[in-house]
Length: 213
Image 1 (cartoon, rainbow, N blue to C red):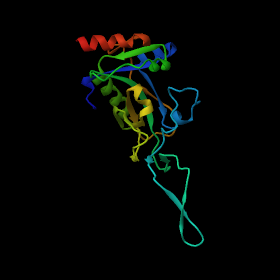
Image 2: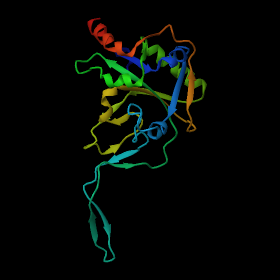
Image 3: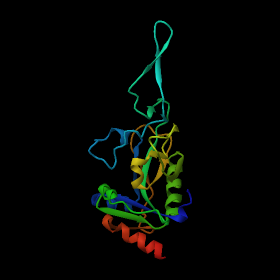
Image 4: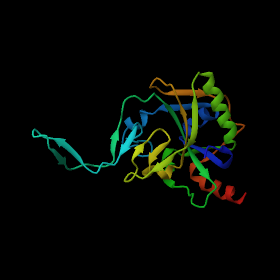
């Protein structure tokens, strides 16, 4: 679902960051940031953010001196693979409201901050993100995160896939390529014409209005 006409994007953040965001300063952390921050920050910490592939392994064995393979016990699936060849990325995360019966706002998202910026024109926001990224000479991709079952997924992870323990975040991402491993600020200019702010505790009221409209 890359069609931003059918979703409502919300940035949940602390009150001290509201003005900077509305000024169009879009702060994008490196992909490594999310796996290295303090684990007490349960909303943002994700040890698997930089994982390239997850493998469900039924049996692991080593070869002994006689040339026989001896099974090793104690495997904890999935096996996380980091190949060290992934390019550096910068990631900007938003909450995504979708007009579907199964969508429900999880109050754990309020952990991200007491304020919320509602982007009422996601298509225009995306256009500005793309233009500003091109001005930096960098390619940007966007889309919703797909949530994977940790006990069954076998294959590639990547920046638009996370394990389903984070499904409550209903995340939509902008991913900037060709980074240097540091944070990046993408400057859009004032975006108050396409945004407004509310307390994050009032996000459920948006869902009611959207469903009624």
